[in-house]
Length: 617
Ligand code: SF4
Ligand code: SF4
View 1 (cartoon, rainbow, N blue to C red):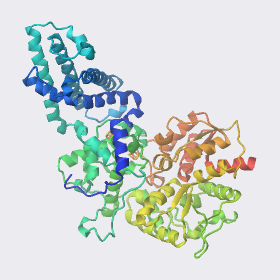
View 2: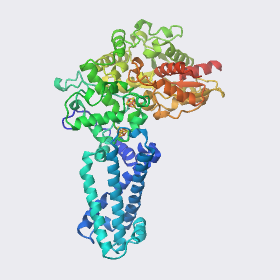
View 3: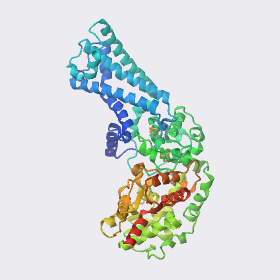
View 4: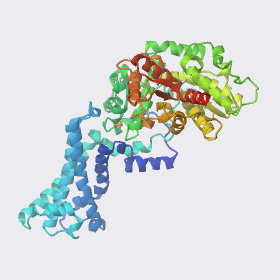
């Protein structure tokens, strides 16, 4: 870790304390899967409660009558120890049952033998503790009422008050202490290293929006030229947080289970990615990470949806690793999927990934009386950031048209930049081309600042994420809201009055960059409820399933099964007649999915649904 690259992860201490309390002590993320999570919580909470018994046993080994001052004499602590020793055993047995009988797919590729050994050691520690206490009760060495140790008391009936029990008392305490020492010696060499690193990794986890990528500092005069990072080519290019991430992985597979790429048969497993990087770091192998730690496919399969990060109980940030690997491949090796090349070229040449002329950017608005902001004009209350997809893609344009009509109808003071709006740089950045992204970030921030913009409404979650979370790194600080937030507020305020259809059944698809990366969950649902009957998919909210477009995948060929087809099947399974979305990329991807799957579903943005419901009224 000392030879790793720097990254800023201090500050925001109250948030970090909160994460320790909820994620580590409260086991919040593990408890999202209640059954296995509770079993892990039993073991973890048991570890905390039983930690002082290590000292008590070490003292007990040398002197049968001595114990830890104060705590060793407390009856209430004896009760806690007794209860938690049993809960640890329950947890271990349940985890063994999950691993051996249920055999969930998330454990594919994990070190299963190592996990069995660790579970065996934990079970030995808990059971020798109970048996030691039982022999002490049988020998009358206990100083508090037997009722304070119900489990050990029940076991004490197995033993008499004789020499054999005196020998067994020694055997159990020695077995207990030696198992603990063996466990401690084995720990740093096993995946259970996470016992020491997980809480530290959670402390240093991100405290801001998960959608923000750390900028590379090309032009920072404080960074010497030889220290400028161009992503991660070898293990020593990783930041210390990324190294700590790999040491913290428990191989639980929760990330793999949530990953749309893995679910559809791609090479990528975020768990195996972490394990591959960790192996290369520990081997002090200075060869390139790609293809030695992970293959090229793995790097390009990711849609940057963040499902892995959301699921990970120890705050590992897989997307940062993947984007850093891409950055090195693109900017140093010039190696990336050939089919993405036209997109990158078009962004640089035409300022949009569609390669259309910027003069056509506001064509959709020509008949709608939308103000196009010219240099020197009075700034509007809201700058409507339309985005490339809603400006140029036929299907996504409907969203822009509907949004503009609705804002006009509600009397909102807004304007668009028209040809002066350029790509935010998001697809280039997620592809790994940080140069291109930063050039667009600086250009757009200059335009927005010069125009005096303070509030932005965006209908594309990718633009929303970039404008709200990434442009502040380049001097662009605005109040950014998503169109679903503004439109739902206008409905609440009575400025828009849709006609609700009782017979229309609508399932809403959460966009990764809106729900998971930016916590916008309620407003699109308010709009859905305002126009029809909502019905939820199983994977919704922050546990949504990607449409397949993120991470610049809109412009890449997909290996394996199609992610959009899987999502459309899930949507159709709800019985809804309409699939509502709040993202132009989701609109295109899911509509493609419906067309190739033949489902009877209309894919519409929430703005279009609202506009239709107002026309109907
Ligand atoms: S960001 Fe999404 S696609 Fe990428 S590894 Fe994580 S879960 Fe898989
Ligand atoms: S990265 Fe996190 S979720 Fe994935 S296997 Fe490791 S600990 Fe589990």
